[in-house]
Length: 240
Ligand code: 6GU
Image (cartoon, rainbow, N blue to C red; front, top):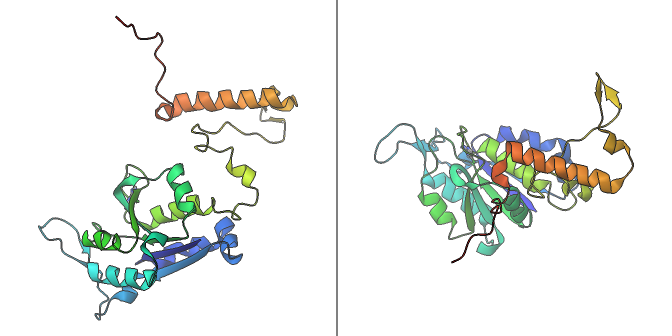
């Protein structure tokens, strides 16, 4: 998979050199290109923003550098072979299932906006050259798309075959089953008066699995009831 990032802060993405994704990059499993949007400006001040039509606070990113950046990165790419992601608090929610879909793409371009966003014609134009997704991390506001893109790249990247050493470890995680993950323990058996649950030391795999499932359910009910399917009615609806 190849991922390109367009940003006015390429230095944000230095962290992609470390940890699992850094290794995947060095191993050639993941190709990552970070590009400075200002490289596609032509004025002395390398201007990327301007005042909004219609008035209001803040600045809007100008369309011209974005158009040139997308043309340069997409080149002769077939429109069906690339996805352009615009991180935005106004986008569709980023979920594990969207991460899984994106992990199967050959090419993703992250267009990181700052200020009050990017001139709306850019996403419209991008949609003539690629699939376009505006994606949000959640219901809060960040200063720009960079940190959001990084989170998405980590979530997507680790699902690309060969990035995570043991694919088994991807299966039993929060959100993969639709439930939150059960608690985990390691040695020592007693730490600061707290004992590891007995069942985990029983050696009975079926009991362990049942306990973990119950813990997942309990935790999900307590902190994320919205993840559970709607409760079955206590009684079958009466018919007349
Ligand atoms: Cl994707 N971008 C920005 N700027 N803010 C956000 C976000 C994205 N997701 C949540 N807040």
